[in-house]
Image 1 (tube, rainbow, N blue to C red):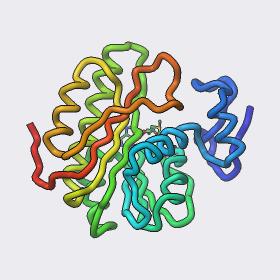
Image 2: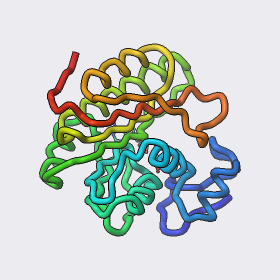
Image 3: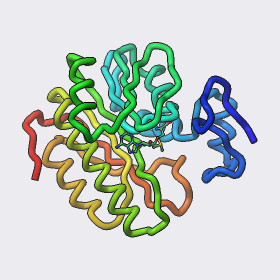
Image 4: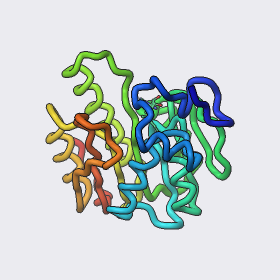
Length: 213
Ligand SMILES: C[S@@+](CC[C@H](N)C(=O)[O-])C[C@H]1O[C@@H](n2cnc3c(N)ncnc32)[C@H](O)[C@@H]1O
């Protein structure tokens, strides 16, 4: 079993025998000091779509254990706020909120922390029950909540990337993104697990006029 230094129990690469197994992205994340292999998904997204500029303020939804925040710290000198139900061990130069991003209380905290939000990223996943169609529906509903969050806080022209799962309701989510952003693409990262229906919606250039069906 492996532990990354500086992380509380239950967070980070406590792998071998985890859901990921010791694959090449896991090994890379350990050697490069990232808290999880998910880091490479955000790096892939950024390399391909350039959603974050070097002075952007960014909110990371579903951020624990914090590997996306580590990548964000490399990409921008702007403010970074990570939000998760679970506490996130501190990362220099970033701030965190422990709570549910779908709630008003957390959304108000964000408004008090940042005067301007340029980018929202979301890698949140609900706890899985093992029942495929139920889990798929909850995962897409959470992605939709992230979209609602983004259109409440983003400044016009801002960017948004969210994890979701292709299947039922995915096209409706895509349509809602298209109503609110000028450019919307679907992307499957090379770091996704084989056989998974995980896909990221990359939405650029927020229209600024909110459309919620
Ligand atoms: C796959 S992990 C994120 C990994 C993270 N991107 C990283 O690179 O370290 C998914 C996270 O979503 C969080 N999550 C799920 N629903 C949430 C909600 N409503 N509000 C905040 N966090 C949530 C979970 O607690 C979990 O930590």
